[in-house]
Length: 209
Image 1 (cartoon, rainbow, N blue to C red):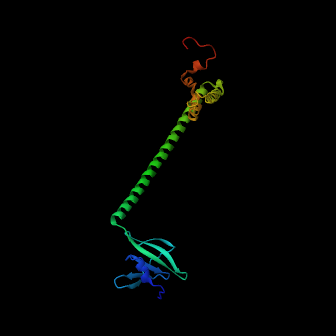
Image 2 (image 1 turned 90 degrees about the horizontal axis):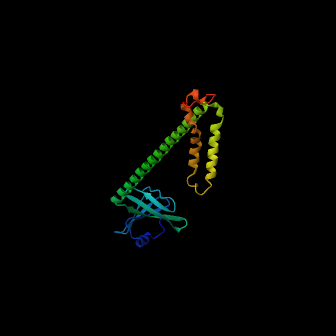
């Protein structure tokens, strides 16, 4: 390999035993400061791009940068970096704690979503029971027609109007209206326990009844 550059002067400017140069054809040039000679090796490091880091081992990295002395013959100036064992160990621990934290966070989110799903099912079940009870009460006295639905709608309309008043704005919220919508249908639930002889009697009730 022909080198048309005085590399010894370059290495004198940057005196570092960890420095080496890589040519465009993959030759790695090391400078022996003791006898002023060059060692040419092919270590197989794939140093791509204008600059970057190349991992050699867990404790050793190469930091490199492309240099253009001649347009036709760019080369890469590279330097070994040795990381202390303690630093590497701490880095691994940080990654480990990070992974554990992500697992913990995932479990928390999963737990919240599961509880929310259970809560939603419970609320839907409660609403279904409310409608079933209201329908049961209405069925005991069919002459009331759509009385339950009308009463429910009236209650919600009145509450919405009250909600525009500053005195009740904080009380009559969306949740309040939602609860009222389902609870209002139960206002005649007592009919369920009244005997048919009394509830469906055509004439007047006696004092005992």
